[in-house]
Image (cartoon, rainbow, N blue to C red):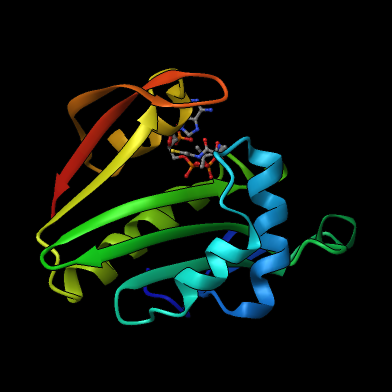
Length: 168
Ligand SMILES: CC(C)(COP(=O)(O)OP(=O)(O)OC[C@H]1O[C@@H](n2cnc3c(N)ncnc32)[C@H](O)[C@@H]1OP(=O)(O)O)[C@@H](O)C(=O)NCCC(=O)NCCS
């Protein structure tokens, strides 16, 4: 799916994958906080948005939904990646809990990988907490394989990272 296209996951629920803008950041940070990710916060996302040539920052916006679900929840998930030379690094991906297991993260990830490939990246890399089995399953689904381990990479709580990669 290319950024800008709309995909339906049920008769009442559709998403549009779009480039993230400054106006999305409050919601992105809220989703980050609720998802238990190592926090970047508003300033870091804002700074990242200032390098549009290198970064690929996408959101999945709810287009059609049950009125109750949609209230104040225009963004269902997001992904942030950066291309340096011929390598892409996927930094953060998260989906609101009520929209999980509907293929949304996989669509965000596949779209970001395609954007990276078009930007000249030949490999994509990411780190994931060794205990985060849901994220690891997602990455396997999108072709990533374990490529190494970084001891005590994360803090709060301290945990190893698995390094994963996929050829683009
Ligand atoms: C990980 C996360 C982004 C997945 O989002 P999602 O939209 O639910 O994922 P998808 O629906 O696209 O899942 C695609 C596939 O990944 C795997 N997967 C996703 N979540 C899973 C889970 N909780 N348990 C097992 N497998 C899972 C499945 O194979 C799934 O396909 P299936 O539903 O057909 O079986 C979401 O759980 C999340 O936001 N978690 C908190 C933040 C986080 O951990 N981010 C990753 C940091 S490295």
